[in-house]
Amino acid sequence: MSLTPEEKKKLEEAAKNLRLSIVDVMSWSGGAHVGGSLSAADILAILYFKQLSIFPDKPDDPDRDRFILSKGHAAAGFIPTLAMRGFFPAEELKSFNHFGSPFAMHPDGSKIPGVDASTGSLGHGLPMAVGMGLGARLLKASFKIVCLMGDGECCEGSVWEAAMSLSHFKLLNVIPIIDRNRLMIDGFTEDVMNLEPFADKWRAFGFNVLEINGHDFDELSLALDAAWQAKDKPALILANTIKGKGVDFMENNVKWHYASADSDLARRAKESIQGR
Amino acid sequence: MPVVTGATWTCYDSATMTAREIYGRTLAEMGKANDKIVGLTADLAMTTAIVHFAEAFPDRFFNVGIAEQNMFGIAAGLAKTGFIPFASTMAVFASLRAGEQVRTDIAYQNLPVKIIATHSGISFGHAGVTHHCTEDFSIMRSIANMTVIAPADGIETSKAVRACIDVPGPVYIRIGRGFEPPVYEDENYDFEIGKASIMRDGSDLAIICCGIAVLQSVQAAATLKEQDGLSVRVINMHTIKPIDREAILSAVMDTRRILTIEEHNIIGGLGDAVASVIAESGKGCAFRKHGLQDLFATIGYAEDLYSFYGLDANGIVSKVREMMNLEYEADENWEDD
Image 1 (cartoon, rainbow over the protein chains, first blue to last red):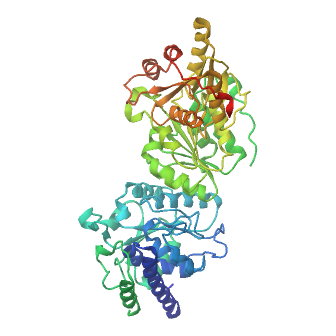
Image 2: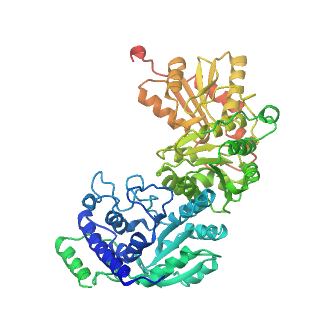
């Protein structure tokens, strides 16, 4: 179903606040994966403010939808999303990366309410999602498992092992999303290690590939609804995004894969986010 | 947790069944009583004998193809949804190929995944070094939350498989290729994870061993008694982690000579685990680690390799005789603590 204007406005507001929060985390933590967090911000916003069935007051509810941040380095985007959604007070984010904090560069499920899997090492999320999908099927449970991956992450062979098994086991309850921001640490994905024809590779592995603009809430909403209702083959959402999206001087620039922010930089970044 | 009663087939079958065969059947029995048990393999259903579980519970069994990293990730995901996965593959793939998934997905998240690692050590000798695994103790015991067990034979494997379900976190059970002769005659003995079994008492020297070395050490001890009049204690240290410190320190105190034997590199394995306990105790004793001396084994059938590397009874007899000539520094304050 298409988004109502109210829904869309709410999501845009959430995504803007999330981007501001990412900049805060970038300052407080002493350094964060800002580029890949900003590229995923709209995906995180629609998942947590519309799509996922989750219960912040009962984070371990057995019927909740699961979310695995396979690109664990985007914790600087994911963890503030959980705070905004009420899993814990946003004030706690100030401890990010500091001694004894539950929050680090990569999310630890044993320390943070609402984190369904500890991730950070790339290529680990989708296999765990497949396991959760098989578990849900055995339990005859109806929850979905969403796994957000990076495009650079897809260089890892274990991603394709998992892709093969996801489609072999016909796990329509597992929904992989790829944040296709086209940049990895050492440069553009196509220069470092060519991924194209990327969509065709996923199709060849048995997926119904839904290729969309990952910053367009209407497209995201339609793709998620379609994935939720997958019938014959599993869906994969290939979300084309812009690394650093929302902060004009960070967009599509590998320099902002990981960075820290002093007060001046944080102010400029926030101005850019507010200006849009 | 439902109680799993004794495995009836062991009475008549254990002498002819291999450890992995017994593992497969034990798991199939346990599956009846506990519907949370699920089984996984990576194209080694027959080889690891988990096929018995697969036949009994096809819905709870997953063959992921030749993809060990994926298998352990899937096991973690299944555990996250409340299941107790038993994942079987060869030791070298469990500990090395998928070592990071075992550490990060399973141990870091402290999930109750039970890893059944077959073809360990040099038991698959003729397959060559690619299929040997003389590093897994070292890897697995340095992973936090992990329990590491190396049963002496099929009967002990059955006991370990049944006991591991009560361990809340991950367990690594290391077994051989399945042609190892039994040490135990039946299941009528106490098996407790973390508590060593004294196979034979003795006061001149203590052998601390695990896996295939247990039977060979028991035989060696009998020979040494007969031919040399030596009283050799044989300790089956089936749990490498958490290690039974008390059994080690009693052996040091009673015998002052410790020989560790393992089908593993002497670096990082049972010998080093025992050495740490002794060193930290501050008590002196003659000490030797016997195993693969930091080398990749040559090619050959397991029995020939055990003989070549001195891991059979003859080799152990020689090693003990060597050790009886070693000196240790007397400790005047032995009784102080």
